[in-house]
Length: 239
Image (cartoon, rainbow, N blue to C red; front, top):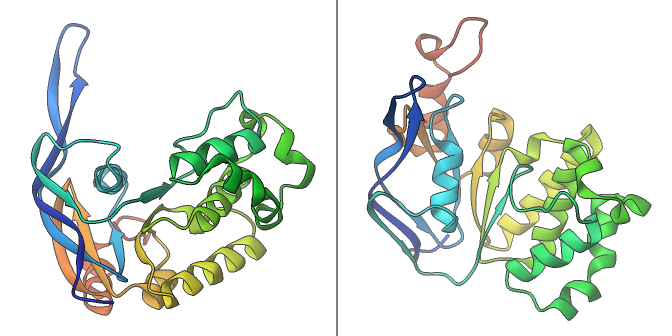
């Protein structure tokens, strides 16, 4: 990790209009007053309960969402968001989606086509690569998205729970592939509920709740606070 900043957030907020009745609606802040930097070569973890603002934050970091207040500055050329819920066209085949996604990540069409073999091999889709994306299971979608991002090799990889999808063998393979990226000084922002993964790959973690930052610091320090008994939900789950 270097001292070079690749992403900078300054008092960033994003709001959505939420319907409260048939004729009424109200504004709700998904994230607000967020300020932090991401350094080149850093692996930054993001934790928080469902609805805390984690996915919204990733969309802001990659430029999919513009903030309603504050400022985001990017000092990099490409950032790719890996999530099973974003960016694929359901009526297209996995092959066509791979080509389109690779081009959106900055690769030339010829380069994506030349590396389709790598994408198909890593995703383990086989003949299913030519089936419509809408027929894919969650695990198949995750495997395809992960494989495309590995080939595209963007400056920053932003991951939304994708390491937790798929069977045990693919989770092990994808985690090791990410560790290789991290060892090569790739910049990664990772949303995950997997404490073991966060502990093993993250340099730093931020903890979100209700759209705001509860804590920012070393991996061990933040996870210790996040998993403390007083911050547990009923049933023994962390918030």
